[in-house]
Picture 1 (cartoon, one colour):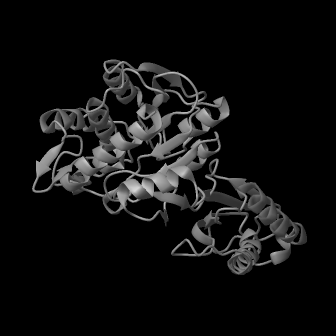
Picture 2 (cartoon, helix red, strand yellow):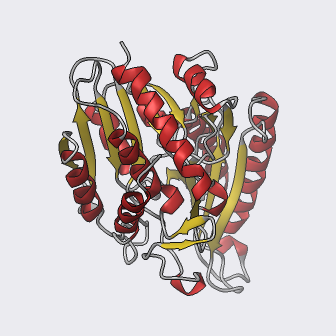
Length: 384
């Protein structure tokens, strides 16, 4: 059983330490105060805390806190940042923990600062002085925006372990797969001119119409080519998100831009999809004298699938008494898996309230989560 007072104090401090990450610079914050807070807590538990700046990202840091030596081991991973919020839509100050009824409320309680409080509570209930394999706590930067923290770790080749748990809110159901995510920009460069004479220019919107028709056909083709019964939406999706172009009805449109997202299934390559789209669209621009540029809006996230027969999947299914499933949202799991670790997404809370006003963590998720983390640590790092 957790120390309720200490757990609440820690969760209060985590929520009271703003760490918003956002592609809009005016909302974006450094996560250094969060990293410093966690580093202090884990150092007090005998961990060696390494705070690593994320190259090229001012004010952004990863934390790697390690206890024990040798090969193998367990990584317990969470992100330090939250999305922005609209305080006027909350029933409370989002940065002050509120306890009411059957839940704690506050920005990041479930997504996913509460996971760090759970991990600390689990460690305190175990003797971790003589670990057989290392226990590693990973706290990353900017998961909610660019995933630059996880990308930097993958490039550095750290951390290394046998198992990795990503503590995103899954209602304590083990998640062994999710789709990837691509966000792409299509820019069509035309030539403006007076609308009374089409020969005076090259209309970017005319070309963009053909671009969208081509992408619709491509979307239908993907649905026929790829399927995965493990997902509720068992095929890749492509969504047109926004489009801009032109400036006046009586001018030939000189430029247009379309943004879309594509969610590939496990086994599909983001790079191959990008190249295929480029090869489909380039001839359209050439035919209309309106060059087309296809660009990624961010680095993308690979689809993730941990095999059903994986040792970690089986252990998590046993500990939770739930079969492993898939989710629709993306996580940092593929970055950890790429480092050679068996990886499962498993944490307290529900994604349904994440990114919403009055985000909360239900009390009935906390003790079971602590127990699962304890047993994972015992199985991987303590049990002989």
